[in-house]
Each structure stands twice: as structure tokens, then as C-alpha cells.
Image (cartoon, rainbow, N blue to C red; front, side, top):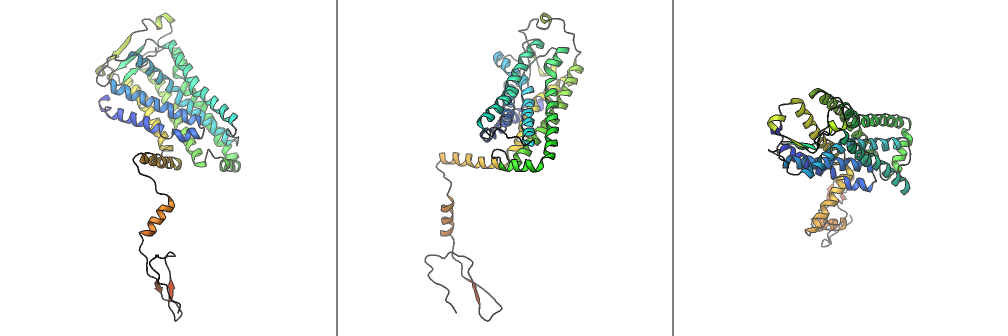
Length: 362
């Protein structure tokens, strides 16, 4: 199964890193912190998986232990950070649907960003720190996959590691339901509010809602399925003691692909974990990479690069003058009329400067 991943997976992972960051500048301008954190977590996860899939292709050698320490924490943080960013998006959509002012003043904007930062950055950092309680040893290395965290399969791991995406997803689901209810009850006020809001259009609002719903539909089933795999792939061990769980903690276990691919459930779990972040990046780009504001910014970026090579965009007046100079004058068109005299209809209001001939009155 992994033999088909290279070079397909590294290509898609790198593309996911790029496309997730493309809409970032104009979302930063709109102060959409929850959306920005979603892009950052998705892009960081794709870059992390891209590096791992390239460095550990056809080998399971511990080339970079410091990088693996960072890499597994990015993976653990993203497993909570992406659902947390979706929660912030749902929370903001709910406040808008209730026709609450969305950070109209700088103080309100700073407060909204602070709350989103606590949810999308501080909370994942706390969850990553708690993983050490059930982290059996330093990390694992899987051939063709790279660095991977090892969580001791015990009951506390369910509460400290596995359950957080489900809890966040269910909270987002509640916000989503409340948003739909508030939107239905306040349709007229909602339309008036969006019409007066410069940073959020109706199109962007509904695209954000679609993104949040799609993320909820993926997070809850996937997290539930991963809990089932963890319990089915190997028995759940009792918690004996801190010393027992962390015995020989500094060791690194290396798995060649010929061994770890023999465990079908393990293959499914690893591949779902890897591809899910790539799918998140492309889903976001599908919703926001082709919108009107995106096409406008693509044009700005194109002409900014073109100016480096001496190509400048023609101004509207210059373009009109160029069209006029290159246009050959047309002769007047004679159309039949009901009267005895012909009617002269001039199709062009502009006349060539060299053409001094005018239609004489009859």
C-alpha cells in the first residue's frame, strides 16, 4: 500500500502546503483569526509530512532525532489544532448569525483574536504537553512514513489524547446547529448586517459555514474510527505506574516497511493520519481559492511579478486609445425606412481624424 505513495504523497503534501497558504494574506487583512489558524495548522502539517516522506523514503534510519522530536509534536498539535480552528470558525459564525457586531472596534478585534489564539495555539500546546504522560518512549520511525509518536495504549490515553478531537467536534456541531437556528430566526437582520460589514460578505460567510460543516463531518467519524483501531489493533493495557510506562524512554523503535505493512489496521491508521491533513488543505482551497477575492488577489500578485520583468499593466485610458488607433473607420450603414428618403445610421460615434468627410443633409 505504501509503495504507491511515492512520489504521489510527497507531491500532494507539498501542494497542500502551498495551496493552504495562498488565501492567508487577505484573511489576515480581514482579521479572520480562526480561518488563519486553520490555514497555518494545515500548511504546517502538510510541510511536516512532506519532509518526513522524502527523508525516510526507503529507509528507517534515525537521521535527525531533534527533528523527529519536533515533528511528532506538530502531528499531535495538529490533531487538536485543526478541529480547534474549525471550532473558532463556528463560534464566529454563530456570533454573526445572532447579529452581534464582529470586532467592529480595535478592542473587540483584539479580544476576538486573543480568544481564538487561546483556543487554537495555547490549548493544543497544553494537549501536546499532556501527551508525555502516556508517551511510552521517545518516538518511532516507519520506513516510507518517517517520525511517528508512540502513545502507550492504556485507558488514560483515551482521555488525554484520543478524545479531544471528538469533544471539539461535538462542540463545533452544537455551535453549527445554533448558527442555523439563529440564521433562520433573524434572516432579515442577518442580511442587513452582512450588507453593512466590509470584512465579511455573504458569499464568504456561507463558504466558511460549508468548510466548518465539512470539517465536523470528517473529524468526529475519523476520531471515533481511530479510537476503535487503537483498541482493536492491540489490547488496552492497564496503567501500572509512571516508571513502568516511561521505562527506557529515550529509545527509538525503527520499523522497516516489510514489517509494519503486514499489520493492516496499522497501515489504515497511519495512512488516514497522513492523508487527512492533505485533504484538509485542499478542502480549504476548494472553498476559498477560487472565490472573487482570490481571483482579484491572483491578478495583483501576477502584475506585481510582471513588473519585476518590466511588464506593466495598461491603464484603462491607454487601452481605449490603443483600441481606437488600431480601429479602421466604418462607412455609414444605410438602412431602408418607411419614408422615401434613406436613413443614415452611424454605428460609431467616433470619427477618424483624417476622415473629414461628413454626411451631407438631404
